[in-house]
Image (cartoon, rainbow, N blue to C red; front, side):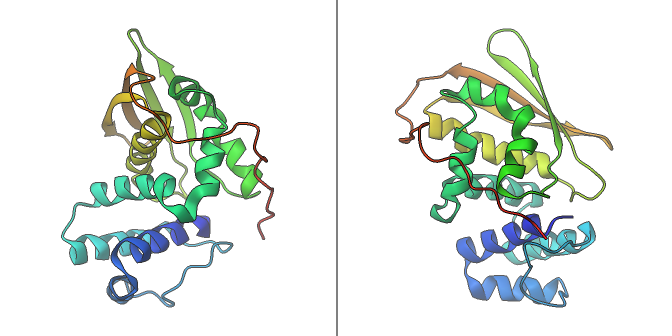
Length: 204
């Protein structure tokens, strides 16, 4: 599993709950080092131990923590580059949804060897969609819940009124159900599509 995913979990816990809480979670997870390196690879079981320790320390369900991570990825000031990368998907939230299948390729513009799950968007009637997330064996469980948090934050970013939620998982995929009620429900955050594109960074 790419270390950037593990590093994201660490940064979320540090930025949201403080360095002391992260240090305690790292100890409970029996990590060799309290810091993940973004360009290294880690076993999914290592990240699973960290999440289990966070559940116990924070007294919060793991799925809720994962969704909070997705929200953090879009809304925290430290992640403005990722937010801009996502906004390049389109001029409104529906355009953005239709761009999700290309997200793994766009993510590799930022990190050349980052391997994200395969995404498939199914267009239903009446503004309804189903997003299928197909993780790889190297991915930790629950990335669909992270996506739910990302989608909620992006809907707010675009100013769209959206109903969505995790709809279950199997060994092969996770499902997210999405209903777009109104694309221009509120004023979204400012964004200029003409801004500079993300700079490519080589992993190694």
